[in-house]
Length: 114
Length: 115
Image 1: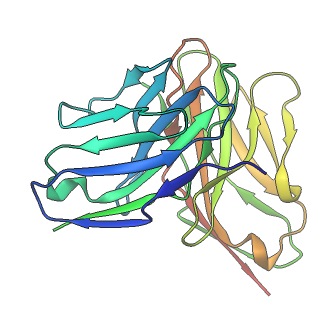
Image 2 (image 1 turned 60 degrees about the horizontal axis):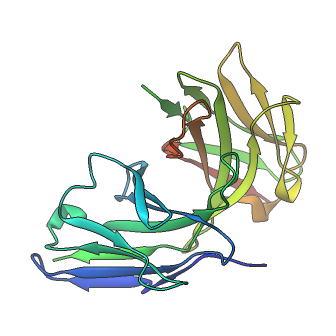
Image 3 (image 1 turned 90 degrees about the vertical axis):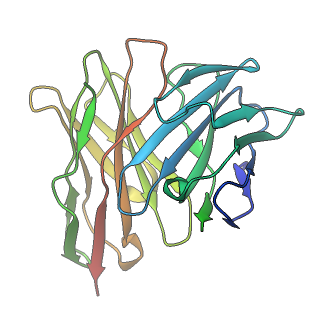
């Protein structure tokens, strides 16, 4: 069964450093998403991406964040200058084009900012 | 504003007994409702969804959920719980009326099934 994969599973970084979180969506999916979950809090939407551009973003997704589909398979989330409060579990998801389709999630990357 | 409430942090049930995990929602348009499950150190696995049609939807692993528009609820149920059902369960909603696809999530309910 096809699945979303994410690397790395755990990333530790120093405050102010740049990090790139990587995701490989399900191959025939066209919509991609990033969510995050700070420990003990709700899962929060960050951004959706379709046709090589951002479709929607939340207020969390400020200028420090960017997304890219650098090739035909990867989908990345970059945080330019990490803050302590960026420590969270980051989930990538993908779905088909049809608006009623389910979002399928990867296992997540746990980001720890020291 | 869209929101999801899962009123119980934890649900405990004996193996073989029926289980219910509660979810209520608020959305301005037509709700698209989802249940996901998270096992330790795993991602969010899709269980089932309600888009339209029959209010009772069936999903993976014997789970089902009932959409109740008047009570704005979408409770997850299973007739006979298994110890292996112990996990964290998340309810999520999106507004089906617009083009945005962001999911709004509940805080999650930890289900413990005791042998």
